[in-house]
Image 1 (spheres, rainbow, N blue to C red):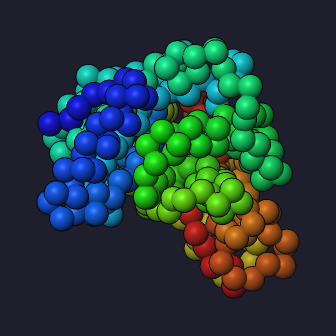
Image 2: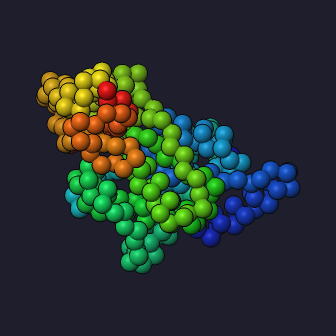
Amino acid sequence: MTVLIDSIAELREQLAQAAAEAAMNGDAGSIALVPTMGALHDGHLALVERAQELADIVVVSLFVNPLQFGRGEDLDQYPRTLDDDLRVLRDAGVPFLFAPSAAAMYPRGGSETRVTAGGVANTFEGRSRPGHFDGVLTVVTKLLNIVQPDVVLFGQKDAQQAFLVGRMIENLDLPVRQEVVETVRDDDGLALSSRNRFLSADERRAARVIPTILEAAESSADRGVDAVVAAAQSVAMGERLVELDYFAVVDPDTFAAVPDDHRGPAQVLIAARVGTTRLIDNGRVLIG
Ligand code: PAF
């Protein structure tokens, strides 16, 4: 059974009780947190499964965080499917779903105090979505303070988010370990995303070009950075329903764009508009 909790005080009480019960059974009572914005899919379930391997108690949070949406972004349209999400988590054997209201998280209507994510937050996703990562890091910090987990799990699909959360944990010495879980894909390679449901049938077919771009990048990696970029752009140009926002090759350790003569491991990032839906994806390549 999954207990649905919307109050911070109640969650803390329930977790203290669960930890006490774990101790009586001789378990460490370790806690894993899977932060989500709901509209759960198999990608979230992969995080849950890994969380269950890593800790005794799993908490999934579901909060569509207004702080990370800019003006004109899809905060109001973001899918809200609480009943379905609760069912999915029950089936997966998750004991706690923490789904607070905006008023519970931000009783003053917002947060005067915020975590600032630094320079990397102004690039790629951050350039298209100013303030987005400050909003993400602020809510993640709140969730970590509320749940106090031993491990927190994020998906690799949101590579820049995972990078910045990792940096925040390191920079601020937060007492938690981050686990990043591989992207889950549909049969045709499209990364699972809560936003995929907004695609029309034609757009869904066209979106297949995104993983194809990543495949083209990988297969041209032995010819250098320029070849990777050229291959990606040439594949993207073949699909008129998809408009590339950016394609970039970055150093996984710094998230900075690599120089043209870079050799070695790199991460390729892609963001594209398919109709009105914005999708992101990424992959690892070895530039030779
Ligand atoms: O990736 C998400 O769903 C959100 O950015 C997160 C981490 C739950 C913070 O609101």
